[in-house]
Amino acid sequence: MSSATDAAEAALSIQRQAPGFVPRMALVLGSGLGPLADTVEDATILSYDDLPGFPEAGVEGHAGRLVLGVLAGVPVACLQGRAHAYEAGLAAMRVPVRAMKLLGAELLYLTCAAGSLRREVEPTRLMTITDHINLMGSNPLVGPNDADFGPRFPPLLDAYDPELVRIQRAAALDLGIDLAAGVYCGWLGPSFETPAEIRMIKMIGADAVGMSTVPECILARHCGLKVSATAVITNYAVGISADPVNHAQTLAGAKAAERDFQRFILRFVQRYGQRAAATAAP
Ligand code: HPA
Image 1 (cartoon, rainbow, N blue to C red):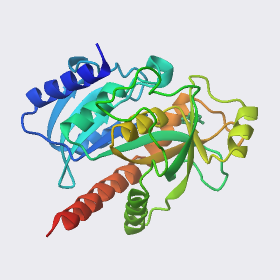
Image 2: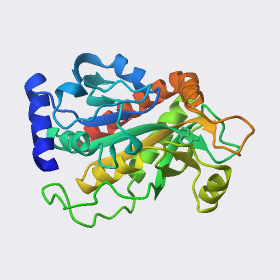
Image 3: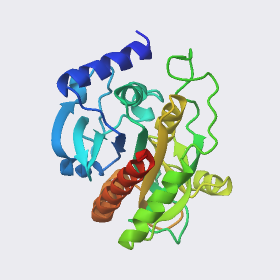
């Protein structure tokens, strides 16, 4: 079955289980960042297991649930948990991303844990992603193109929507959060990088590194979804500090940043909702 059929089936299945619900924004919640979905009002909770073509979200810290409801007055679909490229290939999130498009979402907001390459951007800081470098060794669009969704050769200029970066900065300012900004490097994993690899990644222009986000961004831009993304810096990348790098540290870093992260995303969603309402006014 093609991914177009899968995505359409998944969207239909979601519509059947949440009749009439149209998300404006879809949010992917990364490692340890899932608790935000618990704050969604009027929630309908669907398990990925019951959605055709949705992946198993296997890693500790990822729930594998789609939470539909209202956040700061905006109808949202929270993808609580993602499958990573190292688990299920780079196209692991193709069906969920395209299903969000079919349901009517305008924007895919990606969140992730990441290691910092800059000493001055410490663990627990939030970083708005302004661009990415794909070091994952492939691309989620490899294979026949689904022209129903987008072009063979989608451009990635301004892939992380500059206006939405501005809204992130405004949301951070409102809350007194010191938001960093930078380039995210997608690393396939599942092994962490070596110190030599981190030196290379820093040299080629990245500010943070992680094992997600890049495939979802490409899939979303291909099908015309806007993208905005925030990394939670959970650790210094290996060799940037003397601390060890491991998954427990990622989860602990995400936990420590949880309060700021939740306040920040809520504020972003609220500002996004207000901006859209203002744009729609006659
Ligand atoms: N490297 C890769 N992925 C990560 C890291 C890291 O240091 N921290 C959180 N995800």
